[in-house]
Each structure stands twice: as structure tokens, then as C-alpha cells.
Image 1: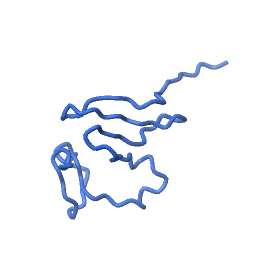
Image 2: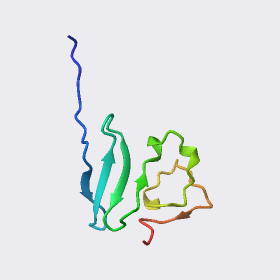
Image 3: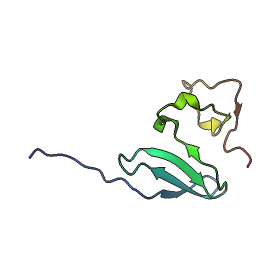
Amino acid sequence: MAFAPGLLLPHAPRATAGDSGNAKAYHFCPTCGVPLWVTCSAAPGIYALQVGSLDEPARFVPGFVSYGLRALPWDVVDPTLQVFERMPPM
């Protein structure tokens, strides 16, 4: 049998604190471990989807940009979108 490295990924959400100190939970696919969405205790009912996890990401249109202060210079943002330096007001 050949050596096969493995990695155990969480099936339960991974809890952390956001910049505000509020609780955030990262949710993962239990099969492959890819991040799917993030929830935040300060905004119950809001799910921040990880666009790369969608089968058809073009079906969804962004409404704004959060954390614009962390934007990379090569990442071109649609100029018609409102950009918030951090989180938008909830």
C-alpha cells in the first residue's frame, strides 16, 4: 500500500471572532471540506456565500463589496457596486 497523506476537516462550523469581536462561524462541506458560507452573530439570518463553491456563480449578482480595504490591486471591482471599507451597516 502506497503512502497517502490525509487531512481531517471539520464537519461542524469553525467558530472565530470577527473584527468587531462578534462570533462568526465558517461552514464546510462534510464531504470535501471546501468552505461554503459564513454566518455572524451580529447579523442573524445573513449567509455570506463562498462564490467559488457554487456550481453556477454567474447566476448570483453581488449587491456590494465588503472589506474593500483588503482588496488586492489586481482584483478589479465593478465600479457600479458600493464598496464598504469593512462591513456594511446592518
